Image (cartoon, rainbow, N blue to C red; front, side, top):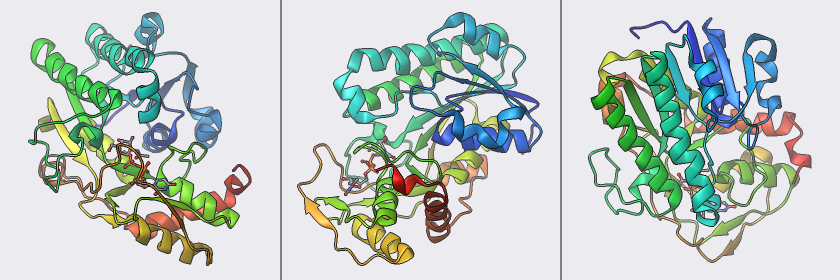
Amino acid sequence: MNRTLHKALVTGGAGFIGSHLVEKLVDQGCEVTVLDNLSSGHMANLASVADRVAFVKGDIKDDRTLNKVSKGCQAIFHQAAVVSVTQTVKEPLSSALVNDLGTIKVLDAARRNGVPRVVIASSSAVYGDAPQLPKTESMNPAPLSPYAVQKLTNEYYADLYCRLYGLETVCLRYFNVYGPRQDPSSPYSGVISIFMLRAANGVAPMIYGDGRQTRDFVFVEDVVQANLLAAATPAAAGRVFNVGTSNSVEINQLWQMIAAMAGCTMTPLYDQPREGDIVHSLASIQRAKEILGFQPSISFEEGLRRTFQWYRQSGQQRSE
Ligand code: UD2
């Protein structure tokens, strides 16, 4: 790591991924401002650092707020977004105002205020269902939802801001992120959070399709690691990186692992494949390894154990 961060802004810092990033930055002695409108984030996610961060309840669409919170920062970690693919399909316009225009506003606030670096949360969604595996950053993108188009647009703007204005931007294409605090409450929440809740409640899971589809699940702490490296590595500027593990897990196998952990014996129910579902997703993390020095450190078994422990302890099992 080549740079120490003294002051940073995390947009969406009260969300699932953002709050883990905030905790880590605070642990490292960084002065952190969180900007979050609490539309999908929760103050409870920041409980462990509440008295050590500056929390601003506000919107990334609000230029004045953005201006204020970005002053003096060495980096902005832009995690705020409409994160539900389905919601962007239902509301292409309002989601674009946040995911497209909001991101441009974040980039421009950085430019105006002399913030040297912006790390942007992108998504494996930009690959669509292109059959090539593993997905490499040099593949042609094939976005299939407003969400994917918005994330890809973010990447193009990030690249432009780097070329036109010298703003150091780094985009991270997250694969399937999981871990403590992931919200399981919607049918479109991450499959691990849903299965954890089902297992804790003794309710059989629903598997869409034959369950042979696979995903590259990456533990949230490793995503935090990727963000910190992206902020600190000079050669990362202007680049896009996959953030996954290069390992994939079948959905059937995922349930078996969670059921074994929870001591459940229920048999899953099966339904039609979910519309628009891709069959396989797997990241090549070669570029992140070579340029960022990224190396996932939490095995899938360990990540699942930590996540399950959190669902058990946090009382999430009562909320379904
Ligand atoms: C992930 C991202 C999404 C987008 C997309 C791009 C998450 C949570 N979502 O969606 O934001 O980037 O990738 O491709 O990371 N499943 C079941 N039963 C359930 C829930 C899910 O069988 O109760 C299946 C689902 O049909 C899918 C797999 O599990 O095949 C993973 O589903 P997901 O919603 O966790 O994530 P994904 O890959 O669709």
